[in-house]
Each structure stands twice: as C-alpha cells, then as structure tokens.
Image (cartoon, rainbow, N blue to C red):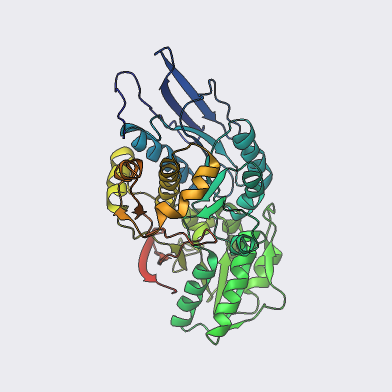
Length: 443
C-alpha cells in the first residue's frame, strides 16, 4: 500500500471532551500540494457540518449517542471510531488517501438519529456509517442508508427484528452488526436464570425494538427450559419518554417472582428500579439486567437503601463479551490514549470501523456499494487471518483474501449481517462497583 509523506499528508483526529461533543480534524493534501483541514464538530443537538469537504478518499460517518439515555455507554463507542480511523491513516489510509470521518450524535432518539443519518448520507455523502447503538435509532436510520446505498454497521443494535428484516430482503446488503442479536443474549440470560434456580420470573422492558425483541426471545427461551413468565399474557413495557414508573414497577414486582428480568436503558431504568424499592415491592426479588445498563454510574443512579446499601447490589446481568484475537492490542492502544481499559461495546465499535475500511480497500472503491459487496469477504474465511487493521489493508491492497479476526470476536458475518458472540455475566457488588463473574455461551 502506498505510504503518505508524513510532512505533506497526515490525518489527525482530536477528541474534545465528550460533554461538549466530538471534534474530528482530518488533514489532506489538495491537488496544488497545499494542506486543507476538514473540521467536523458534533454538538449535543446532533448536528455536524464540515467546514471544508474533501473530494478525495474514503469518507465514513458515525451515528452514536453522545447524549440521551445511552450516553454513558455511547460516549466511549464514539471515541473508538476516530481511533480506528487514525490508526488506518497512520499507515497509508484507504485506496491511497486518508479517511475522513464525520461524527453525529443520535441523542438516543430515533427522530434525531434519522435526521442525522439523512445528513450523513445526503449532505456529507459518506460511504459507510458506524451506528447506531440503540436498535430503535438503527431502525429509523437503516431505510435511509439503504435508499442512499450507504453501508451501515451497528456495533450495538441487538434487536432480533433486524434478522427478520434482513431475511425479507429489506436491507439489500447495506446492513451488518458486530454485536450478536438478542436471540442469543436472551437465551444466555434464560440459561443464567435457570442455573440460579429461578422458576417464576416476570419481565419489564423499555417499549422499543430492543426491549420488546429481547422480551419475546427471553420468554420463548425460558419456557423451553421449564420456567414460567408470570406476566407473559400482560407484559410490562414502559414508554422511553416516561419520567415516572410507579405503575410499571408495581406490575413487574408485584407478583413476587423469583426474579425480574429488566431490559432497560440507564436513565429511565434507574428511575424504575428506584421506584420499585421505594414502593417496597423489590425486597427479596433478584433483578436480572442486560447490556443497556452496564455502566459504572448505573448503581449510583438507582441509589441506596435507607441503611446505605446500593439498591441494585447483587443484581445479575449479561452483556456481549469481547474475546477476539485483536482485543489485547486494542486494549493497550486504548489505555495509552485514555488511561483505562475500554468499556462495553468499544471492541464492537472498533471492529465495525475496521470492516468498513477493509471492505472499501478490498473493493478498490470508496462507495457504499463497493463496501457492501466486500464486507463478508473481509470478515469471513477463507483468507489469511489478520488482527491488525494496517496488515489487513496491506494484504487486501495487494489482492489477497483476508479473514479479519476482531477485538470483539471473529466477526464472521452471515447472510443476514449477524455475528455470534459470547456473553459476560456481571453483577453489582456491595460497594456499587460492577464485576464480571462468569461467561455464558448460548450456542
């Protein structure tokens, strides 16, 4: 692969504080050998406008939550995308030119996400997008991506609905994800509940694609294992825009099940569980959680009991794990930049970005159509196994087949855009810290 003259062609991406947004700076050499700077600022409103738009090189976008109900997890996902772009640009970019990134905040809101996706596709003219996290946002964004032939790779939208839609041919190959669908996580959580001896459980979920899809998959899996879902006939689902949850909390916990399977987002979910405690209905009931609330700040948001203990202490949960061959190198890079290990969905976000870059190089074109045609070629066997993005770009540039082995896993993408993964089992300790205590493989 052609290397760039470091003095003339270089891409630098600067991460500003995520509280005010993401600042991405990409430098390129213009035809008259002067250097121009493309600056993209993402504000909490989700708007981003490049000051100067480059006509050279691959342009991709990110559509992830810096604000809203999933911001606590989303902010690290946002930061992982420019890190991967920066890595690729340092070793020559894609198709002989630096990669440009346009970042958008979807605000964990389908309407904001659709507007941002429209901008990325129709104004910024990106070829591929890493996003979104919330399944409801991806549901709103993917028709826009398909219509504009933009490859959309989600690092965290896990609703089974996407598998069903892909099987119907709705996505035309312009959809994939690096996190497995919740049909697998629901089975993992059902297996965990069964292992813990829970026979009667109830569910409470956020009323969107993620929550309802997970609920249905869990009910089916738990019943096959001999369990009973006590509110199956009248499931408890809460409005994502709600601010009070007394009714939903009482309905989920009121029948005194062995456990309550709570599929939540952090901001709203913490209020629901706090309401259950304040009503006195959660005592003696194990709370089982999922990936939507696995963040360090979640136990504190739910709050403490009258005697100073965390309300959600001893809660159990599942989250897509990361056990890929590239995880160690990503962890080292992330720690060198951030001083701490990468959080949830950082590996999946890194892998989604890597697949866009590798597929564009394999296609030898910077178009969404080209990327879509090569995603499975670079993700799956046969081919030379590679974990390093730069090595992968070099090999595909030389016309060799590769099998990208990611940080989250092998990221073998099937015909529906799905991957299969393992799941970490996590708990809330007495001091409010989170700890991974086991793994569940639902296959």
